[in-house]
Length: 175
Image (cartoon, rainbow, N blue to C red; front, side, top):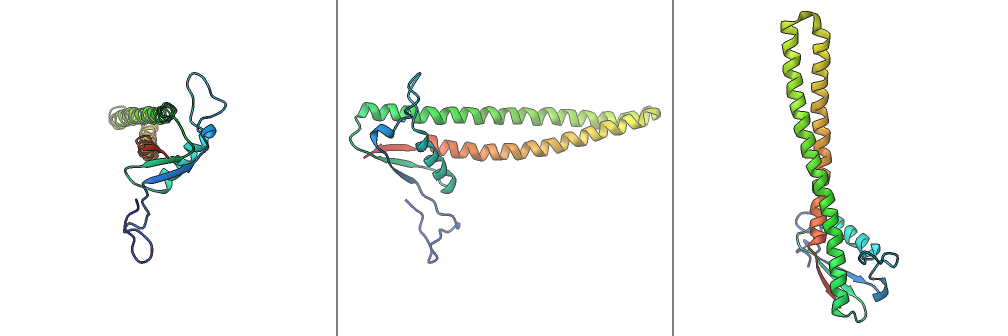
């Protein structure tokens, strides 16, 4: 379902929201023909179509309708399970990446604070080590810059996590 559009054909936000993706796939093309064990994998073409859809059309819920000839219910369940497992794996990777980014920010923040404290302590107590105090202060500034860079990495991964969650939580229907 699409949001209501104004006269120009745009939604209120300027971005069209879609919630249904329809794929026309032959039964023999549902699964990756090269992967058999340990469990069947969904054809990568399906993942590409889903990923392209969630990037192009924002929204919360998603429904995937697969138009194909008769597919027995057990094969449908195998497809759904393989599909959901794939996106669960992708979600786990992104969560692990985000956890590492959060840990990195905390470590860099601790180093930065410690370096600023040390950098301000040294010149006031040991005048001959002013050069080293400058280096320590530069290190603290570098840590702060790395925190900003890490934040941008985390922002991109958070957006990717949102897309993966939408794809993972999609309702799959066979027609």
